[in-house]
Image (cartoon, rainbow, N blue to C red; front, side, top):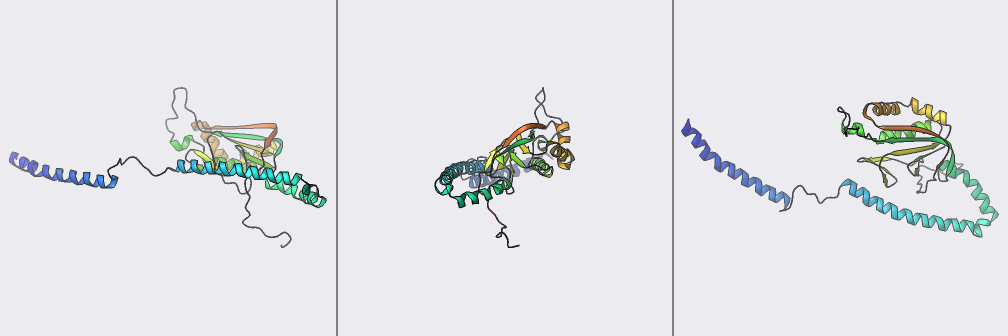
Length: 247
């Protein structure tokens, strides 16, 4: 038995060394002589950061052009009776499209991630997904407010219109090229009791409130006598439109 073990050891060592050498060679080939754990490919968060920089730059250009348009409207042409009448006709469309600021009585809803307790711990049975606000949570609040008859809704500092699409990127929210971290504040103008009743009846909002109790997520509803929402400053692209009066 001793001889057999020695023979196995004698033949096993070269085999192990050969395999180790092959592994090292493969590793070097894959890494190109560099560090394998280091990644030179940009992460998603870096791509979003670069995109947000571009959005901020283009937004500044847009604001400059909008100011020039306002100057033209206020000029001699803007004083023309026909132009003034046309602008008066289009003003209500701006309200419906969400391009003009509004204020009035409303409701402010705030959602935020769970916080650690006094001992610096989260609930024992919580998974990471249980402790953060998700896209569907924000979307559920937005939908409930619209269902409750909201006249205007704003998420963070941006007006929500028909083409708005909040998206989750990691633990942040992406809206029109800009990223936001919690807490997420939704401001709505409208009948406060009706909006609160709609929030209370929404199944997804009810589920979120259960997570508030169980895992410590944040949720508040604050009625206010007067709130302000911004007008949407982004471009509005109509994908399904036809001339008025064509049926």
